[in-house]
Image (cartoon, rainbow, N blue to C red; front, top):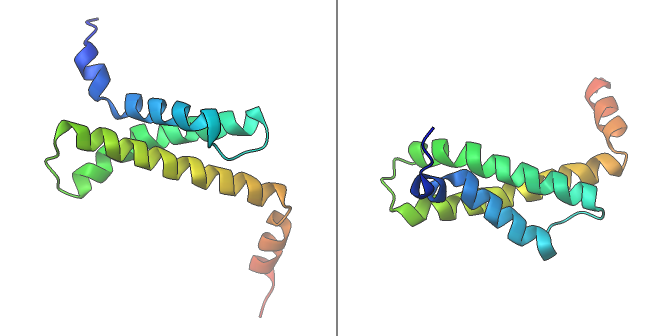
Length: 105
């Protein structure tokens, strides 16, 4: 296997990981380190897997920095969405939501 540092630097996974780690140091939502770790991993995965199809769907032929910036922003959005989902689950509203789906009106 060939190691290509330039390809690694252009990867949305790298930009997502760096963005997640920088944000995790201070600004990651979540009370415990376990929640923060889940948020960072979710942001990193969202940046790596969502950014390339999103850029392709927008029909951009972006400069190199555009994809990295987009990966950073998608990672922040993914991290925030997971933090909100964890808070929602911890608040105990899951039962209320499921029962509201099953009640006839």
